[in-house]
Length: 121
Image 1 (cartoon, rainbow, N blue to C red):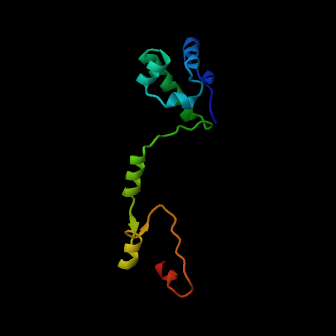
Image 2: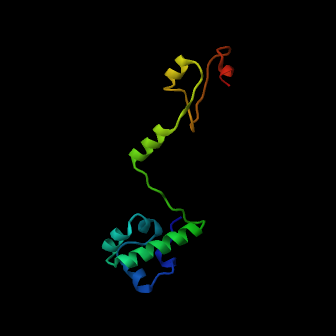
């Protein structure tokens, strides 16, 4: 749910500047740092910092607005690679699985009856 900038306790002149420059919702404001916001909205760095502090504080206390954290593809790759594996104690199976059964993922073990699926657990 997007929250309108007009619903925050900001100075009227500041609110008008933000809306006039296209900052109508919380999500659009939170995409910028204080310096970027001051340049884009034509306000001082102090005003931009105040806006971000108010918006972040209100957004964190409000259950209707969630702050979206941004991650680059490189960050996600690093998280993916840092997660470990549960080894099966069968080196051939671990090799096929790329090191074992990956942690924090769903892995389905299937096969015909009698091939030993239950023995993994």
